[in-house]
Image (cartoon, rainbow, N blue to C red; front, side, top):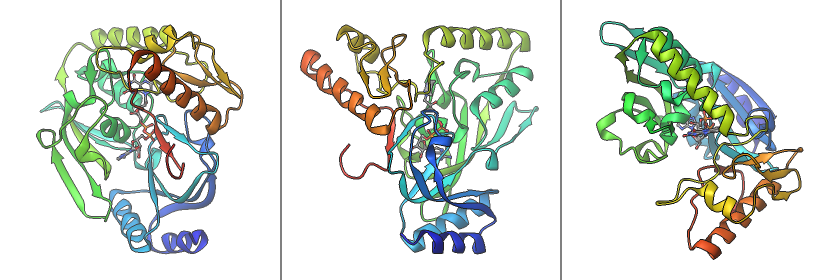
Length: 307
Ligand SMILES: Cc1cc2nc3c(=O)[nH]c(=O)nc-3n(C[C@H](O)[C@H](O)[C@H](O)COP(=O)(O)OP(=O)(O)OC[C@H]3O[C@@H](n4cnc5c(N)ncnc54)[C@H](O)[C@@H]3O)c2cc1C
């Protein structure tokens, strides 16, 4: 890819911060990942559309990055354009008549939750502690403690990859466990959420309890991507891995967490290959021993061919 020429074109045609060779490791919760050839952070919804049209015309690979908390990026990085929607496209407004919120996709989910709780708006407080952006949460239908972001979603807006805009109502999206198929090949730029009024103090307590519980159960002291695998029907991935005696299993700087076997943590400058080799080993052993085919929740970026 002619990275410099494409970066120059983006700089000319789009209002955005454009950079070359940006290390993913600075922008992923794993603290892992080689360079992104071209990095672009547009500052408005319109500019996002413009970036997409340039990328489509140039026919170069695109990766859409939120806060990088559900991805494992290869040590070789990504030879394409990384469109990052983070604090460059953040913020919200609330309509108190209808208890709705219009939210930009780059906003951090926890910031939004804190803002709703403060205003006595209920619906998302159980998701407190899930790292990442609102766009990433919608794309993944993120959830915890029996609540998913789907429940509060009213409408999702953004662009298809060719730069044409879309607006989908919740009813038009087949949300499922960690999936939202209609959002797969889209760039979400904003969403409207429907909340329900409740006492702010009650919500605050509920949120703090959740954060406390998560800190107790999850190895938050090490970089990770959260649970590596989806919950297989009828089982818990972590329990299967623990039963194999794999807690503490290491490859290079990566390790199956001692605290929660569903997490593969970066304990000592792990490479992406270190993490991936543990993921593969777990998959083999779980299938061999229990006949269960684990499905990955983490998304792999920049690994050419099968990984
Ligand atoms: C410690 C820890 C705990 C976690 N706990 C949970 C949990 O309890 N429940 C849970 O569901 N998840 C959990 N996760 C995973 C992660 O937080 C969620 O998947 C989160 O929603 C990802 O958001 P992100 O912005 O970081 O997305 P990224 O990791 O940046 O991207 C994830 C995917 O979403 C796509 N994407 C990102 N932004 C957009 C956008 N604007 N439009 C369209 N697609 C987009 C990306 O292309 C990629 O395919 C945890 C992760 C960590 C590190």
